[in-house]
Image (cartoon, rainbow, N blue to C red; front, top):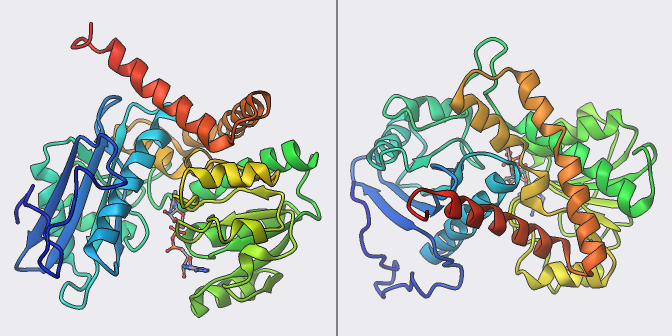
Length: 370
Ligand code: NAD
């Protein structure tokens, strides 16, 4: 494998990196190839100002290399902001493994990825994200200690972060419903969940317990079946789920769902879900605010997973400790909702400013800056 090689598009022409639209003072971007396993991965380190860059590994089939770079750049910056607002002493990073028939999922593939993470010397700490599992991280762990999200032991924090993420999203939905709809409970509140995968299914269980009425969609029939066998849900086609007549929309699939084309058709008053990078562009936050739709910034409401992963990595925390931290997600959201109302600015702008201030303050405190 090699690190830091020049980027070449599959067509052969050079792809921009430093003037890439999503390049935002990222500290480093690493391109990796392992001939034996076919591993191709990109690791983006956005910031280590608060600590080692922490963020999961996504395995996904991208249409183009540029789509993979874009994802890594956006997701890693999101991790800087997420970790900052969650009060964690970690910076922001993210990795993507390019899924292809030539590089099937295998223990060797994840071992090769683990060696790359090890080579980065602790500047990047990985965990599972979409397309990777707790099991996969065990093979990464054989090669490096800079990995979290491993199988749990006893009452210690750790393991699959998605149930904890879902718990945080539930609390966030409650806070948003109270703020925008004046509801003290989710009893009878209509909620559309886009994507009933790891987080989405857990979230549906919690929302059902809270009395919400559920409308769900998924492109994966198996996942949809799991949800509808277990819970009373109304299934709608994936193309319609964003636009159903509901109080709350919870995007729990992939990013880029809130765009200039989708926002005008959304009927929900609240958008609060687990997916990363829900807004296609920053301006889409303003588009939502103009329509008086309350948007819970994704990286604030979905921080439960990284809080869990971070506590596991640091060691010495129990699941109760983690749940105590998750319980602070609603107050962080309320602060952002209030500031957005007072300043008449979109919630995403307020959250980004808050995160950037935390990162900048850390830089000012560092011995180098003193
Ligand atoms: P997952 O892959 O288990 O679930 C995603 C689900 O969305 C799958 O069932 C998939 O079929 C479905 N889906 C994909 N495209 C869809 C579409 N167009 N319409 C409807 N359904 C669609 O992933 P996950 O771990 O549940 O994560 C979901 C989202 O939450 C991701 O954006 C992830 O980055 C984010 N997130 C996850 C965690 C975590 O702890 N797992 C933490 C923070 C953020």
